[in-house]
Image (cartoon, rainbow, N blue to C red):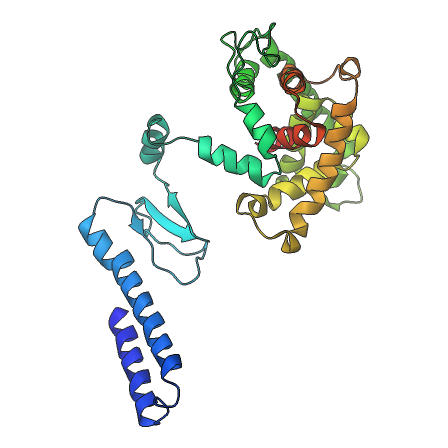
Length: 321
């Protein structure tokens, strides 16, 4: 590959000299030579010299355009890395490697990723400071009745602890599971399967359904109701379809796809955000169907002064995650 590039570059330069046009445009051709040399040196260092000097490091895969169909490791499940839009990503596919990576909490931290995720979802700088602010007893932002994090950790830590308690076995989890299962049972009623029906039969006792559509809709609908009750559905009847649309194009938010080309994700996100803001604006006594985790997180956010727009963005992340 590198030898081919060198031969091609030499051939181009010889052609330039033969055409006697080099003397008339020396700057242009020197610029081409400089850029070609920089590319040659970068590629030689990145894909040849560096892997040789550090053979234990994850292999950087050479490519012009990354393709999801490419089998870079030839099914060996070797850890490798790719660079996309200036960011290096490490791909781990072997279950043993994944387990070791998750256990290595010193090397693998999610704080920077979480910060970037908040930024991508539109959470402002002031709100991000409030999320990690640890108040003292004489501070107005101190939570005197905080039974979740009695050591007065930040709101971000409180949110993590709240969901840990919500999803561990116990009364809180049982309550959430009941709403989830009731929603699943209701969705699976025969007369409510039109959303996933692909063909019907004359005897009306058989339907051809899409298992993919059935599972996607049922899980998203049940998860949404278990967290927010029926409120988001009341404010936006097509809330499940919008969440599914968001999930399908969420990569545009994760990788900061330009807004001008991201209508596939911006449209459903806008609809969900509108419903979220209406839900948050309800008095707490009118949100009795919400889960304990959503109620507690909103109370903490209200106490430290996070505004409506940023509250909605944070809840959207929690719903998506």
